[in-house]
Length: 118
Length: 115
Image 1 (cartoon, each protein chain N blue to C red):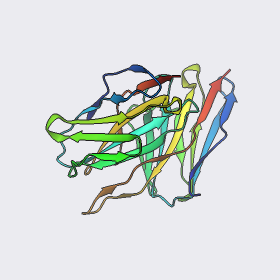
Image 2 (cartoon, rainbow over the protein chains, first blue to last red):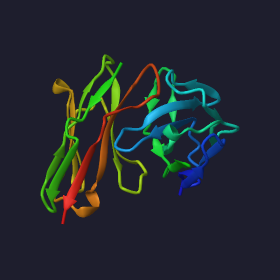
Image 3 (cartoon, rainbow over the protein chains, first blue to last red):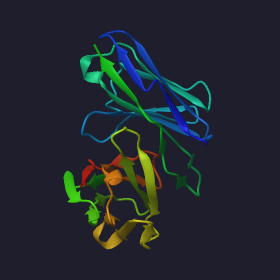
C-alpha cells in the first residue's frame, strides 16, 4: 500500500547530540511537511517543501533543519536537541496544485517518531 | 489568517451513545477545505474527511456523519452508536484554497468511550 513511513518509531538521544529523523513516501506527493506535536497539543508545523521549494515557519528555531534529496525522502535534523524538543514528530505529504485550478488534497501522515531527550 | 476552534477539550460517553464533536472556524478566504483527523493513542493522524467550502451537503460514512453549515462557520462531526475503538483525539482543520498549503488545526477534542 502507498504510504508515509517514518523511521525510527522511537528515538532517544542525548542533550545536545545531533539527531536525524527520516520520512519516506510512496504516494508521489509533491509536498512534504514536518510537524512537532507535544502532549495534549495540536501538531505545529515546522516547515514544508513544495517540490524542492523550502518553506520555513517564522517561529521554527534555527536548531531545526530539513533536507529533501528527492521526491520520496525528507529528513528532519535537530542540531543540538534540548529537553524542550522532546515531542512526537509527524511527517505528512499531500498533492497540491498551485495553478489556477488549485486543489489542496488531504495531508497523509506517517505514524510519527517519538523523540526523547536524556 | 485562519482559526479553528474546538471548544470541547474532553468528552466521555458510554458505549453505544451518540456523540457530536463541534468545530467552528474563521477565515477570510472565500474558498477553503475543511478536514477531520483522528489520532488514536498509538499517535498517527488518520484522515477522515475533506469538505470543500462549495459543498454544503452533509455526509455520512457508516457510523460517522458530518454537518457543514457555512452560515454558522461550523463543521460538526457525529459518531453514532459509539464504540471503544472510537476513543481518540479528533482534530478539525482548515486550509485555504489560495495562498498556501498549510493546515490550521483546532486544539483537538479527546473522546473517551466508556465500555
